[in-house]
Amino acid sequence: MKYSFPEHFWWGSASSALQTEGESLGGGKGLTTWDHWFANQTNRFHQGVGPQDTSTFYHNWKADIQLLKQLNHNSFRTSISWARLIPDGVGEVNPQAVEFYNQVFDELLEQGITPFITLFHFDMPMAMQEIGGWENRDVVAAYSRYAQICFELFGDRVLHWFTFNEPIVPVEGGYLYDFHYPNVVDFRRAATVAYHTVLAHAQAVRAFRAGHYAGEIGIVLNLTPSYPRSQNPLDVKAAHYADLMFNRSFLDPVLRGEYPADLVALLKAYDQLPACQPEDSALIAEGTIDLLGINYYQPRRVKCRDSAVNPQAPFMPEWFFDNYEMPGRKMNPYRGWEIYEPGIYDILVNLRENYGNPRCFISENGMGVENEQRFIENGQINDQYRIDFISEHLKWVHKGISEGANCLGYHMWTFIDNWSWCNAYKNRYGFIQLDLNTQQRTIKKSGEWFAATSLNNSFDKE
Ligand code: BGP
Image 1 (cartoon, rainbow, N blue to C red):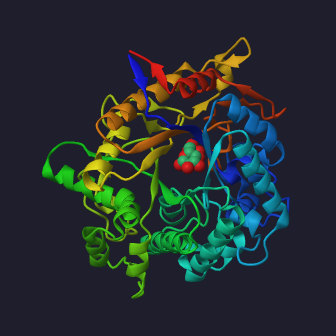
Image 2 (cartoon, rainbow, N blue to C red):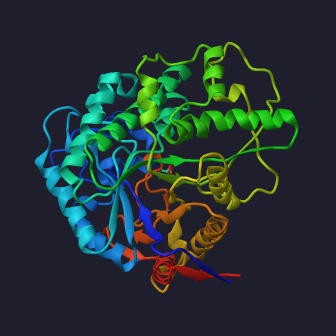
């Protein structure tokens, strides 16, 4: 069967500043939490590879954009590094950063590739973290200023802005589950970080609209549909709690302009609510977006807890559910994530039925695989598994669109193998293989497949 996509469908890929630029200690850039954490706890990073060694986009941007062109991208998302643009978060703008981003955006446009730009992709300037990071409302104000500076500097060419990428990840990683700096485990502080992130988002949206900039503004959320083990009401309730905490905590404010009442009631009952100010709700109501980016990697399966909660243990989302391993689930063993293609369709249905069918696109989807050199045939990685992964997901996207979902594009994570935070270069996601020693780039079979799919705006599959 031929799967054809709507006219002007966005075909591209996503990346982020810190994961690709390299030069994290140069070019006038300030330190981020990642530079600091790496210097202090190198052992946290796979094979001791840190943020300064990422894929050299800072120097190779021109050649890399040629590769994007070869992949027939019509759009491409990356982020601006706050710490590169404003090294201490609040002060002077770094002219080297302005020059770099100007060149990148100009070259993308020159090559017919629309830039989609994220303002914050996990990379907090260290100077901002030192005053409390997202726990401090001064950082919200500093972010809002940074966003406005970006609109002023680049808004004549960047027409698709995203305030945050996966804002729940720094909350989970940094304040609940110990996989990002500052490695705090404290739900109330996590809730404060999440809340202030929503305020920062809304301030940026407000500034964007007040400035009458061209284009549109949105956010990128990682949505993980919560599937209950069974239809037993207790399992269903467990799934509802997981959905509230991990999806609706961001989805509702940015699409409906308010938090779900039952999430607020739950946090209140356990004394975990962040401190609110009277003007916050009006601001949040103004933060509704023009465009939603959906990152989808895996579903979340949950069941009713098997055991009683230990009241002496820190309050956690898992007080309300247990994670559930469905027998027979398909796994990506390298990343440890379940692969469940219909999840991407369920997200689109949910948005259509419950959120007014917003303009949206798939902003990340992808498969990290270890030791891909074993698949080299005639000098090229034959990653048929990635082609299968993408096309199976695209089939479900196609179905969603054919039923009316307002889904405008599909971006893969990612174009060139890049640095994956603490996993460094363990799992490779790219359409293009990166040789870490020589920095040589070689297109994988999936890259060719994607280039053809983008060119034809369709692909064939049984
Ligand atoms: C998303 C992030 C990306 C990217 C990707 C792959 O959550 O937006 O930055 O890293 O996941 O995940 P990982 O790198 O953890 O394997």
